[in-house]
Length: 159
Ligand code: HEC
Image 1 (cartoon, rainbow, N blue to C red):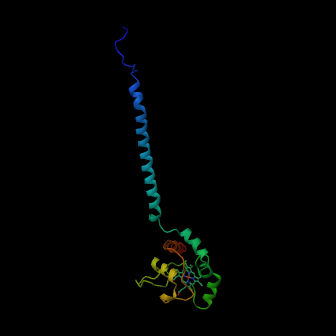
Image 2: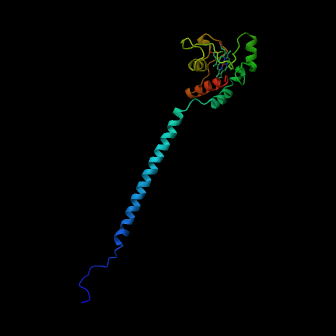
Image 3: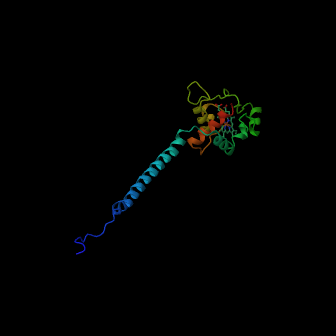
């Protein structure tokens, strides 16, 4: 008898090798979890930024041009657009926004004309309903963000 044992040959390295796929799997799951977490955090940050960020004056400026506000108010809000000049001659000037105290209408009657809310109200509903000029008509189709951006642009003109 050469050997009583019928045990199959087992190299001592078998066990660690058999464990390797599991270690690999665990690593993969770990990595996937990390990547998933990182993605979630990244997404949350992306979503949070627009909410937290202030109104965009540059975008407001583009909307101002698109809505042709400058026809009356002029390119930099000094009331010197082509129609604005005529209005001035008629005694109903659009105002000069380079002076931050030039705003007249107090739409929410809080004693402070020209607040952000006042400007937003005039832009969306026009000046006439607030006792102002009928030449300043309501502007339709603007979202709240659009209006906030336009107000930020108007503010930037007096800095
Ligand atoms: C047809 C001319 C005309 C156009 C176009 C026009 N406005 Fe006016 N706007 C006026 C006049 C006139 C006044 C002054 C109203 C008053 O004092 O009664 C005015 C006033 C304002 C005021 C200030 C109100 C205050 O309290 O003094 C804001 C803000 C304003 N306009 C924004 C805009 C924006 C934004 C646009 C473009 C979406 C625009 N306007 C387009 C004529 C115009």
